[in-house]
Amino acid sequence: MKIGFINIPFKEGFTIKSLFSFEKTPTNLLVAVFTLALLASFVVGVAMFLTHGHHAYNVTREHPWGLLLAVYIFFVVSSTGLCIIGSLGDVFGFKDYMMISKRAIFGSIVTILAGFAVILFEIGHPVTMLIYNVLSPGLTSAIWWMGTLYGLYLTFMIIEFYFLLNNDMKKAKIFGLTGLLVGLAAHSNLGSVFGFLNARPISNGVYYPTYFILTAFITGVFLAFIVMGFRYKLNFPAKAKVMLEGLAKIQGLLISILIFFVTWKMLTDIYGGMPNRSEVAVHILGSWTFQAEVLLAMVLPLLVVLTTMGRKPVLMFWASMIGMVGIFFMRYNLVHDTQLKPLQMLKIKEYQLAPEWIHYFPSPAEMLISAGGLGLCIAMYYVGTKMFNLDEEEGH
Image 1 (tube, helix red, strand yellow):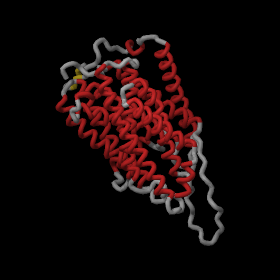
Image 2: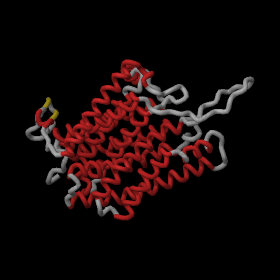
Image 3: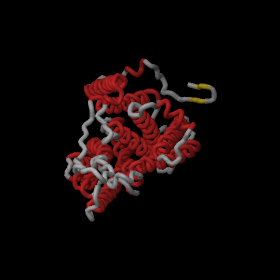
Image 4: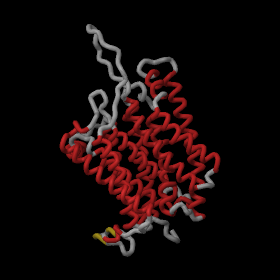
């Protein structure tokens, strides 16, 4: 389809009607029903929010960041990870990874849009935010930079995807490299939103801006196995096996580095008994959500890599599915654990009770909107597979 000077190469025979035509296997029907249920949950959750406002959420002044922020981070981390995977082929020229470039770049667009859809209902006045983001930029605000950089990143990803569809690899490389650099800057800046919290010693410091990039790459590899697994229905051709074996070995290295990072983060948090930091770290170590994060996102996938050396992509597919559950816990823990210890007021004349741990559990509205974000992600990706040819074309 040509709109002015823009040529969008849709799949041959694509129509709105074709969106509803797919192979009616039990698995496909289950995924379709599951996706529709998630989309319905999003509608219900948004209706609850529009009816009751932020009272529909279980966030408080003591725990202002809730599940929606964690899910937003989950999606934008996934987007940056897929951007890194997609860049291996069209930006850095690794030919084995060209076969996933278009699929990964489109996935990065879909996941960040899903993240924006979720955070839209966490922000009090999103329209006002967009207006004043331009009229009165907060150049010293990490959150202002986060929104601005992610907006630029999405723009570059869309342009890169357009050139990939048109097989203009030279321009795709230029916009892909620019988008990658802006995306990494945005993602590292998202880590700084936590690192700049001077009142929260458990997260304050340089750890999170670098940790976010590492975990984004790990998430991208997990998603690469999942995307390719569904593309080939776990019956991988030889070329895909070569690519996935390389990714599995990279994943083993990345997870090993992550375990190293997390170990030293916990040791330095606990050592010395620093108030508001060491006791929080000990509390985190004893929580089941942190243990689930370590087991599902680090230990099990690493064991699969070490025992198979990446030569069993089907096993890596299932390890990646488990790993993404662990990544979700990782994002939830990041947000919740930061707020475990209540901030203390400076009282010099009154007796103040010893603080207790802050307890938080997401409300039905938060859970419905969050689940709906996954539904939006799956639905948009499915539409993209129908509209565009996301496979590598012969000769390019």
